[in-house]
Length: 360
Ligand code: MEV
Image (cartoon, rainbow, N blue to C red; front, side, top):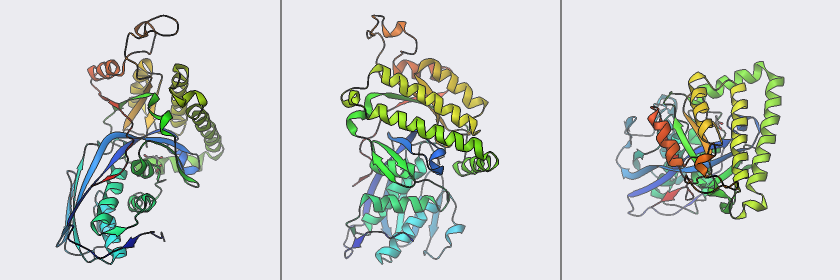
């Protein structure tokens, strides 16, 4: 059982707390992270806001579903899976603080749900932070919140690696490994590449896709092991680019091109474990023609595709003297978004969120 390192003081009259946490993209390593590879993730500038209020009963109010109970006696497995993690957080927090307060949680999100952008992890992080603060825990460490959020997420998705939850709490860019935990990638190397995201709008369920990959692994053990080794090598190549001396100020154009190429190679590995499909492949092809490389982000089967750019605006001079417009794959992010949107897709720019969890 998880030992939450939290101490508590007497409750006072603070009856309302707001916390917010960002969504994420997995840049490299999804699925393989569940089997021991490190993943590289960054938090993005889309957030979930949760307001926690002391109340008579237990209520969760969100755009997706609502819940109202007059005690915590409800068996967790009987709670609507969409609301189960937040119910778990409310129940667990009252248990460990010894509080008998009811709690109302109001959820507002600008992260599209079910799109692989970490909306449920952000909910768990913001929810755990808001409830623990509402119940006046003291000495609450970020790791306590991450632990509680991971356990909450596992009430619906037992194999969750914890990667999405960690990056949402920490912000910025991290590596995550199920054995060794997380490590922040130094911020000076962070926003040197740009990201565009296309939401395929194809619904997917992370738990289902993760189980599908598990079946693939069990049937194709040798192939899976090979892919796992290749992914481990790929992630170490990415890290050596991000941590290289050159990246102190600005990643060189060549480095960003390489990051894009490695993303496209990562996509090949994701295709090999069968989490892509024709509709996603089509979007990836379009994005690859305009960016330095593109791949699924998150569970796949649907959800979002990310493309790497160097953030530059069109018309700046390249090393060869040609303008960016004249060279292939050198459109501004805005132009890329415009073109993909004009094809009827939901496409947007993403910036890295360096704040992570915010509690008010
Ligand atoms: C889902 O966002 C990422 C997966 O790697 C699952 C996980 O890490 O828990 C598919």
